Amino acid sequence: MWTIQDKKGFYFSPKDLSLYTYINELKTSGISSLKIEGRMKSPHYVYNTVKSYKLLLSNNDAAFKEACCLPENDFAREKATFNFIKKSDDIFTPKLSKQTGIYFGKITKVHKLSFMLKSSLNLNIGDTLKIVDSAKDTSYTTKVLNITIKNDSYEIETNLTSLKVNMDVFKISNSYTEKNLKMFTIKQQ
Image: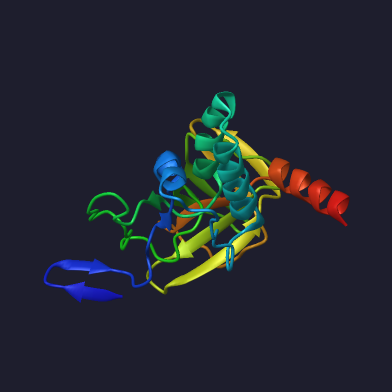
């Protein structure tokens, strides 16, 4: 963790490069290929990113809307253009350690094999969560074993026992997409 005057943050907290909104500029500049970074990324990220650019390059107006939504649901980091057209100061998320996934909420209560949090996002049994302990710069990954909704909170059953109140929770995959990716992989083999 770094400290400068009264500010603190985590090293290596960049956002992901996303230029899908500039696809026309890329095409007219004479670029004939794109390198999509997939190393250390989830299958969701690779699938959604490749599909998004493929749809955008197809010149199909109907596909444009779908293509622009895909990167926002790839369970990766926030997106940035990294000074592609103009200077951008918004390329890092230093307040989040090991930030990958869609921010789901903070743990509000911990039980032996479950925890509670408030969130307006959807969650299903089989989804995968990443739970981050920023104080120790550590993270834990778990599948959702069971869910109970109480008032406006989720109680999430898990196999983790080292959770604490105020840990950040990120959704890093959903069971529906995982099933589709497995079927896609099986068909390719």
